[in-house]
Amino acid sequence: MRRIHPDIQDNPDIVQAYAYPEDRPWLRLNMVASADGAAWLKGRSGPLSSKGDKRVFQLLRGLADVIVAGAATVRKEGYGPVPPRDTWAEIRQGRPEVPPIAVITRSLALDLDGELFCDAPSRTIVITCEAAPHDRRREAAKRADLIVAGEEGVDMRRAVAELHQRGLTKVLCEGGPRINAQLSAAGLVDELCLSISPLLVGGGAARIQNGEPAQVALDLSQVLEEDGVLFCKYTRAVHGDDEGAQP
Image (cartoon, rainbow, N blue to C red; front, side, top):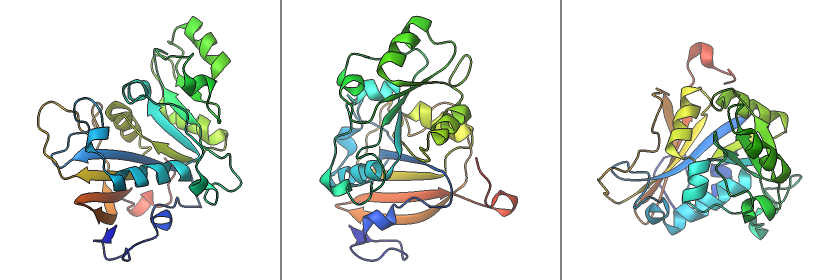
């Protein structure tokens, strides 16, 4: 990867480039989009990705305490357990060898007999709400660490607070667009890592946020480039009384 932003050295250490802050909880979104803002191509994000994007994707997973995704993303992208990686040994010292996946779902329409719930080295977490079907909640509790956060829908602030209480403070969210929008509307997003693919898609693909309106001011803190793909890191802008505030 080559330098664009003046604060990034040539051939940068991407572990350091994407390190979490040590002094507070942190919620990071990681998404890929086309040059015209599409979050997927033919219904999936994979066709927008690149070799560099896949490296960043895996690194961000290794750095995280927990990986959060909405149930629609889990189904559409075919999520399975996170496999251990030798390259993560140093960055995961003192933590489980892989981060758990936390699935956000109101309906609990999940394959609870699938490998994500039966073969995961770190027990999968399911985050739902009181309105979820009680029989499905009982089944989910047998196969996952169940969090009930909210009444009619998942309360994102409560959900993230529950993760923090479990010591999972370095949070990586992989979407989808509706989950991203809800997190932004709740004031919970600290950082956006966005890979921009040199591709025009058009059509009706969603943006990386789709749903609740939210205006979150961001500062561009880093840009890397490889093979025409831009790897942008934005952090939430801090102004005046907001400095040091917790979401």
